[in-house]
Image (tube, rainbow, N blue to C red; front, side):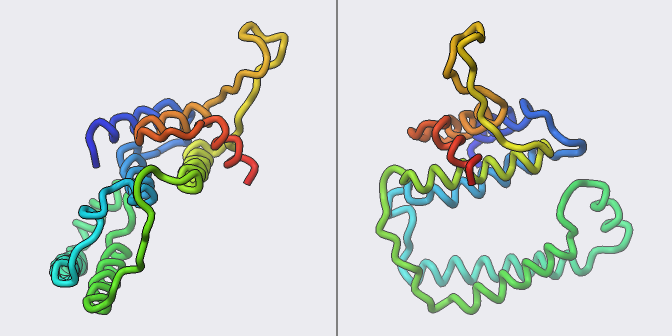
Amino acid sequence: MDNARRDQIEAAISELDLIPDVDIEREAGQIDLRCSLLLMNRLPRAQKTRKQDGRKKELAELALLAGKLSQTIQALHGDTLALLATKPIENPLFISKDCFKLANACADLANAEPPQDKTLGQPSKNTEAKIASLCKNVFERLTGGKAAVYTTTETSPQGGGIAYGPFLEFVGAIYKAYDLAASPESQARAATRK
């Protein structure tokens, strides 16, 4: 995760009226991972693809590491598991199962060809809409409230028709962290209608 982007995401989460016990660092990591996956089409093709030998090597290394992590977790003593339970993280035994599944998936995919994705350059409006929807889900989960974009009225000191609200600010901060060109207001409004 890019440190500057991570700081921006953590700051955006910190500005929300959060429910108790939210691990801001973990949530920022999850947002960054999910947004980065959605924005993969921004990377140059040379960074996105590997020749089959390179993919096989990456998958074999990942399978080995995932298998080792699964075995290490399975071998943890009860007091270590109890200590880990004091942190708001996924149950390590579930992680172990996921690592085992990941190791098996890597082995199964060693000779597979990746799906062809011809999209390059700036993200599509669809991608930016997906990020706004992701923001909506995260916002509602972390605040316990409903995501909404509000609009000032003619009688407000700022004048009428100005969008505002914590959800809009959150979407704007995430869009800024990823340097997205779409309007946070229009995407946030669209996300709230879904």
